[in-house]
Image 1 (tube, rainbow, N blue to C red):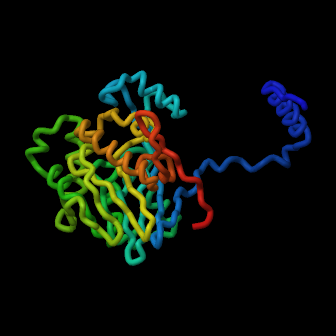
Image 2: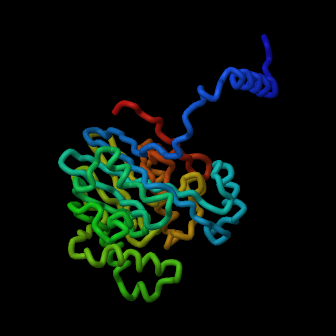
Image 3: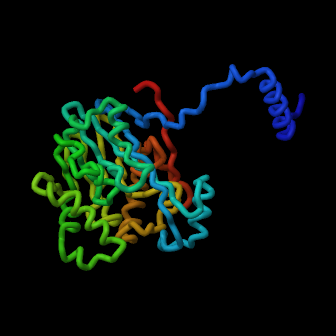
Length: 325
């Protein structure tokens, strides 16, 4: 048996490449790179429902030693390096809203950034269109919480409703907290911007916004579940059809390579860190034990997979692409 070393393999590849180059003329050269990404949407079937994950883009968020409470920055950077993330001082955060077609209605869970946070995000409208979903056909928007990457897409940059026929449903505790002037007056500088942005998006359409109490079924087969801590009114959604279900985690965990693997870590955007940790562990324990499908807004696209208990934390196991529903 012939043993092939790594050095021999690379040398052979180099020789083969050189031979191919000699045989290829300029006229035979490949077309230049397009420089453009393909449309980013992914469909899955859940019982009688159809799920469409539509990518909004990614935000390369600068981070420093203040980013995670309860963890040394060197440990955070090591976790990022271990996950092959591209930057030591920026966390690349994907945004993936989810459309649930329940048959009678199209329900959009979170709306992305609206192109108002980074040039690398704001592609939800184009990806919905590529998926054959007309913005005017969305019947319900249900948000998990009021952070900008989840609600800014309710409106365009020109302050026009992006989904003009949709009923906008929001958790009542979230609405009450961020519309309270006393809470605004006590907010730290880092959180004050969230208040002002939420008011910019919500205030002039408040009469058309439907608040709901967590625990309510917001549409047939879609039930809200309180998961406070990340924000005071943060919710997740359990979507069920027949004997199939998925838990839409919202911001229960941001990048799973960091905050599922290290569930005690408290990122700076968890407003009540200890409570967020408590709910993170509770929900991740549940889906791991039940082997339940999950969708994570900030998980790598297409953001579907499973959670497995691993040591003191959890591992995210992404779904394999399914060519047939």
